[in-house]
Image (tube, rainbow, N blue to C red; front, side):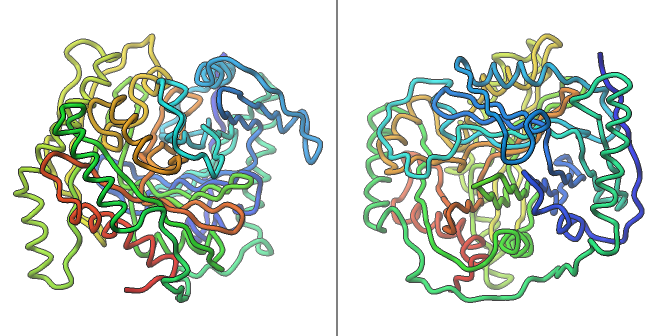
Length: 478
């Protein structure tokens, strides 16, 4: 039985950030923030907290925590084995709602780490799993705030789940009232600084898991694999870590100011805080079964002057290497979507376009398809995860080479973050330009695609170009 969500408009002058200030300390709070709307990439920001169910998986063991049946510190966790993605799919099937006009009106919010790919494909176990990040973790949210960034309209949507029938309607009303009080009562309102203060970190505070020479050597090894015909392309990355005094929510505000992006997010998930400023869509699925993926391949830094900025733009626009690299990933994405989509429906809607961001230019493509009615987002994830733009081609062989060349597992980096609605719609990004906090330490990773024509020194400096916004947010200068 499909549930019709309760939707209530809220009259508030507060920004999305100010509203979230009142929620950020609630259990499993999230902000999916389209803070740089780009045509076709969404216009809504979504806020939420206090899910009724939390599902996490690691190494094939999935834990299910019913937060209503076992509230507070006495939460009972049920462990199940078997295919983790099927477990998640079966849980989502229990809760179905009618699609509201708003793209997301309740459902699962969370992330798949890059290493979840090990549950889908056989990858050697070489890199160190030092952070022990879950393969995936999702909260099931019956209550969501949707903010239209075009009209500034604010709406609270509540499904009343996991209750059913009349009890669902009753619970939905109570939950809407609770959330409205949470974000609008005068004593709950806080002063929100749109421009968080500056702070300075020292360069010696940051540590990389590669030296410059080490990274360039790894690039050279990857190029050898390409020249030997093992692969056509591979994405190689390096990870940085540092201790920083800044609180994670303040860090998100700073990163949002420096590097606004259409798929930004802040997740406060138990021991993990995720500070994301991604510009790449992995999978978008509409109510009519329309599928879209938007891989990025090709980067140039923004120039310090108008002339150098224009020169960098033209260099990317005219780069045959970057166009060839993107073309290979477009072919891979077409193949991934073609595993499921209706025959003849997969098409390249946009071969090459340049998207402009405060610190970089990116070369982007758009591939679309039509999912048949007997398939869903979980089938798409199984067919396409992880995204080809951050692995290489052929995908599985590229992942094997990544495992041998990168010293630590990627965790959430180059995984996917976003929502899967109870109504079947979904929007998931590629987790890039993202900082993770665990145990008072911050971690972030940056990389780039390699081809036979890659230059090891240039590839090293490209990773630093991509890291620029993250380092600035953490207080590093220069």
